[in-house]
Image (tube, rainbow, N blue to C red; front, side, top):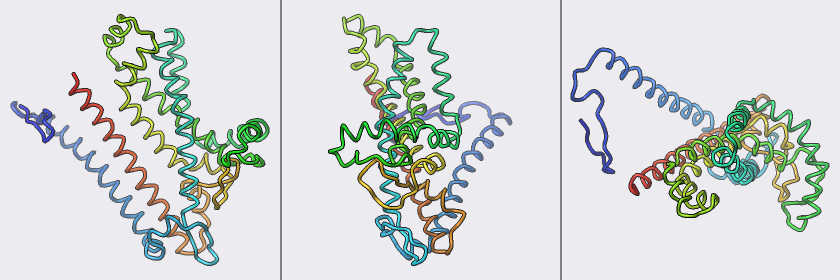
Length: 323
């Protein structure tokens, strides 16, 4: 037995129209308790974070979001520079990782020989399992000197007229953090995009090729439109990972609390600053301000996940209505 919800979609009621067994009731109870437990846990985390940030909320209000500076001596705190660094590093990483991830997904689904797809797919998924502290250590010892000595000067000599590519003098800087975050979110977007490309019906692709289109025209006209909603959601999930990454970014970004227009200057992010400062806070207001930043990250995470779910459902609804 089924009913229709507000959107006109069919909704099945559990265990209706047949005799209910004890095992079914136990399964429903355990599954419902698990779902309720997740909601309760999220509520408790949010409550504790809001409670811890209350002193800073009452002292600085929303001005905390735009204040620049972190001065425990004079009890003046602001998240403006950390918000700026978070936005620059996460958006920069997303811009670098998305085309690479889509290229990897297309190679594995449309172009790669069968014998190479399995090993490459396993390597991409293994990259997502590497601990962030390991990537951060590699970024500090290997990537940062490489970028400082070769890549940063080349970009400055070519694009130095743009303020983003100022003089390169630090190995630990915002650009290094962007590259590290790119490496960390690349397997997330690539794996999800690969699954989406594999879900495209084969008859649609064969029909497009049968009409005389090239492989690229088939990908552009069939694969991309079919999977664009899911790819957008994968990008948003990758962005959420980049926003919340702390340890790896803290190791390579340079720990600077100001704002600079150059990507080759040190900087900081919300998550990285929390990881660096949580163990040595001198005053209750400083502690509350750090928790205020954690509250901002929690809100960002919830918004990112809700937005990804909305995009996926909207894309699925469009595909369902077009069939």
